[in-house]
Length: 62
Image (cartoon, rainbow, N blue to C red; front, side):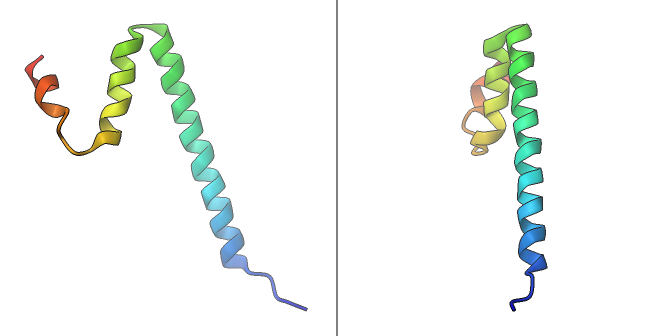
C-alpha cells in the first residue's frame, strides 16, 4: 500500500486558499468599481498587473 503524499496535499490546500483569496479580492474590486467611478477603479486594478512602468508616465501627469 502506498503512503500518503502529505506535501502534495498541503500544496493543493495552499493553492486553493490562494485562489479563493484572489477571487475575493477581484469580487471586492468589482463591487467597488460598480459603486463609483467604474472606469477609474478598473484602471487602478490593471496597473499592478502591468508592472513594466510604461503606464506610469501619463498617470503621473494627472
